[in-house]
Each structure stands twice: as structure tokens, then as C-alpha cells.
View (spheres, rainbow, N blue to C red):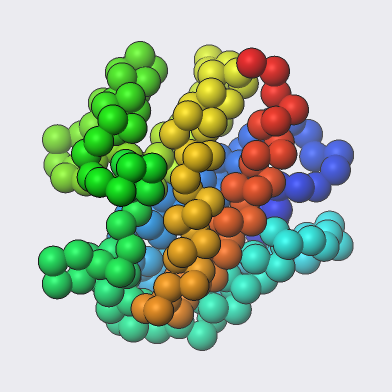
Amino acid sequence: MSKPVTEAPGVPVEREQELRANVYRLLAALLAAPPTEELFALLRDIDAQADQQQGPLVAAWRMLAVSARKARVDDVDDEFHALFIGAGRGELLPYGSWYLTGFLMEKPLAELRQDLLELGYARQEEVREPEDHAAALCEVMSMLVSDPDIGAAREKRFFENHIGPWMGRFFEDLEGAESAGFYSAVGLLGKEFLGVEQQYLAMTPH
């Protein structure tokens, strides 16, 4: 995680894919559960000045590292619960169906489940959240990017169908959420990363 930036010119394709998959995996971990002390230790060591790069995504990485250095595990645990769990529901609902229709468990989830079935992905029995949770979708993208048998066109279609239409708005909401301290930096990173991803995937033919 010492070089998390994915907008560097001249990065070998294999390394670029590894970086993209790692960012998706990190976002999935941060959205699925409160960060552990081990994860905080990694975040505090982020080197966002790698290769002397500049830009919004680099600034977002710096902000995440600074926020991780200031954060306390117990406080962020409370923050996570206020944002995503709450008493009945959290401040935010990180589900594709909610952002696209205003309701949970709607048509976008059914379409996602069909695409996951075609990809050969199945929800694990112990997982209670529906598949259109932002963490689950980031995890799926990390697997798609990492799988050499998945073509770039299929990866692009999945992003355009299930992530692009709504997740940027979710990260913007997370960045500005009333309960967000550390997670405001997570929202900023997610927003800027998805912006880079949209540009990257726009160059991929269908």
C-alpha cells in the first residue's frame, strides 16, 4: 500500500491492475466493518507522494493517512455504527437499490444477482447484507480486476451497470455525513477513485 495511486503514467499494466484491485479491496474492507488496529497501521503508513504525483486522488490518499493517524479505533467503531447501523438504521444506506430507486431490495438488486450468477459468484451463507451493498460491490470489482480470465469489456459493463450509476453519490454523502470524521476521508477517497476509474474504463472498448 506504499504506492496507492492509480493515475501514474508509465505504470506497467499488471501493476496498474494490482493497484486498482487493492483500492477496491481496501474500500470494501472499510465499508464492511470498522477498521482494525492492523488496518489503521497500514493506512498510517500510506505514502501518497509516490513518484512525486499530484492531483485530487493523491490529495485524498494524504487525507486518509492523516485521518488514520489522528483516529482512535474505539471512536471510529462508534462512527461506523452511527453511519451504517444506528438504532434501526444508520445515517446512510449504502445500497444500490436505495440510491437508484429510493427503496431496498428492488430491481437493481435482482439485476445484480443475475449478473453475479452469470459470473459464477455466490453470496456466502454467513453474509447477511444484500449483494448491492457498497462493500460487496467493491469486493466484486476487486475480484474482477484480479481475474485474468475476466475480460476488460466485462469488467467495464459490471462497473457501468452496478457501480457507476450511484456509488459516486454515496461516497459524496459519506464525505459530508454528519456522523463522519475518519469516514469523511474514506468518502473522499472513494469519490476521487471512482472518478479515475470512470475515466480509465471509458477508454476500454465494450
